[in-house]
Amino acid sequence: MNTNSFDDFIEQQTKSAQTTPIDWEKRLEEWKNYLDTFYSSVEEYLKPYIDAEKLSIDKTQIHLQEEYVGEYETQQLTIHLGSNTIRLKPVGTNLIAAKGRVDMLGPKGEVKFVLVNKDFSGPEINVRIWIKEEEQPPKEKVKPVTGWAWKIATPPPHISYIELEQESFQSALMEVVNG
Image (tube, rainbow, N blue to C red; front, side):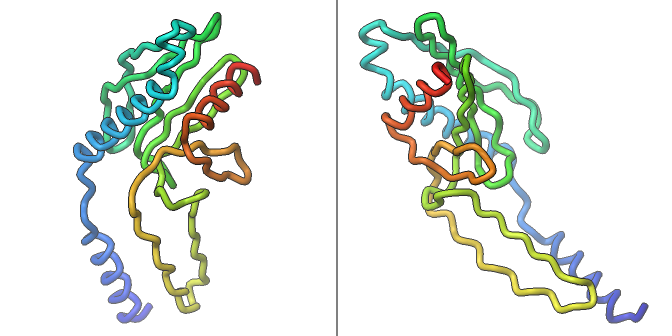
């Protein structure tokens, strides 16, 4: 091994250690605020049916545990519709390709709501592979986040995002109740 390789190795390790640390407390507070916004939207979408006493909703405290974030309390929203119970259960904020996720769980299925870059229509994950002796390919520019939005993620393998609106939420609710 020559000294230049070791020097390059040391330089790479030093650069990777100089990244800005993540403020996990701030991230948790943001996550809880986004959850509140999501639940407010759901309540707004369902308000005419709640007012007509055709369905009801309630919130309960749950405990979540996430790597780096730790254990914390947050709320789960439950929708009572006829004999059906539908839960909107937060999954967490420390995820790949999303800032957060909530799963809608019903008797006949589940739908995933993801907090993602508002400009994205599907997940974007880039992978770079190279052979050690070859020159590294250039890094692709990461698209800046211009804002976050809740969207519905379609099932894999070809995941796409559907804008979250009253109609798409109601369709998701029907899906988890009727299958």
